[in-house]
Image 1 (cartoon, rainbow, N blue to C red):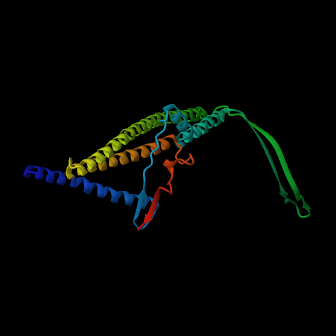
Image 2: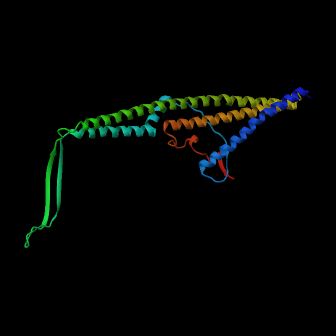
Image 3: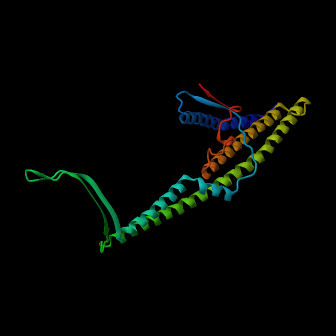
Length: 270
């Protein structure tokens, strides 16, 4: 049915495919170990289910960036630190200003004057004190300059963080769009592969196709489904990365990308 050359070509193709099989099996083991570590389980774990990737409208960069500016914790931290630094500038600037203090005290006095005379009893005092620093050796000016320098440093850090987040959000939006388009393209490929397998099986029934043709069509369908599953996985990962970039990961209730769905996923302990 075939020449030695064709047989040798088939054997070489099988041998070339074995390293990919070995690498894939190792990646599966590594993924299970990482999942077990993240879940804190001592025993081995496995996950069974189906990937669902519903592609609607793609996220807009402007909307995602607005949410990121509002929700990202590092930006909020820098904004609060800048506010505190501005207040510290005001405090440092008050070092050479007049100061008004109210001081008061109350207590008990035990005083002996001679052998037979005593001046015991309660004692209290109250007063207003005004202080005006005439010259402090330019200490206040130095503290004000230092406080303003801290404010400028924090503003630079805020600008750097904002630029980094802008780039991160833009990349995340582009990754979601790219993964979604790949899913759409491969979905039609799976349909075509299923159609080819159906035609090969019918041709084999009528004797116009060989079993090898059917096997090739089935292999193409398996590859197409594998590529589609990987594309769906990439889309889900890109969507979660976008939620993280926006600072909204876990904030949207009911989002199928952010939680396990019990009817489609099952976590098993071994």
